[in-house]
Picture 1 (cartoon, rainbow, N blue to C red):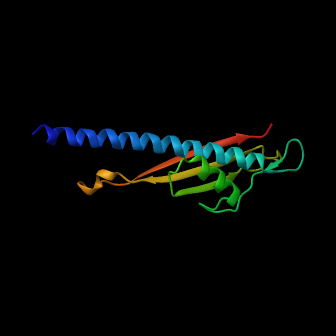
Picture 2 (picture 1 turned 90 degrees about the vertical axis):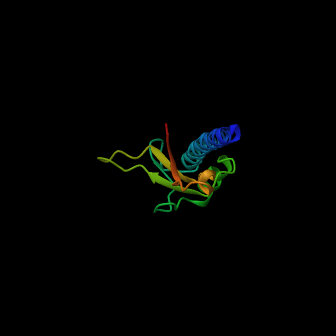
Picture 3 (picture 1 turned 135 degrees about the horizontal axis):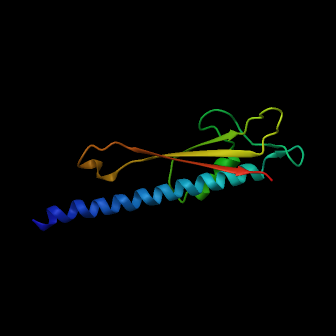
Length: 128
């Protein structure tokens, strides 16, 4: 009888730990991807930076994808997108944003149908 109560509790603790780990890994991947993107951007002058972008959702440059994937600590597959800053009123862009999305699948879904959770993290790095 006690097993029927403790097993779901144990599974809940394990799933919560996996979820927190995944959120941390995705956040770290976004941070490292943005750091790499701004560091490897094309610098035209002291105030102009061009964020590397291949355009489209999930279509970041390979080097940014590699940096983010390495930082994700084995969580994957990841959808990684770079978003260059727009030029507003002639002011050149000075930042780059990287968005990382991961679909977290709950292991307890073998017993109960549970939806997958999308974890998204965005990181913006500024050029000074």
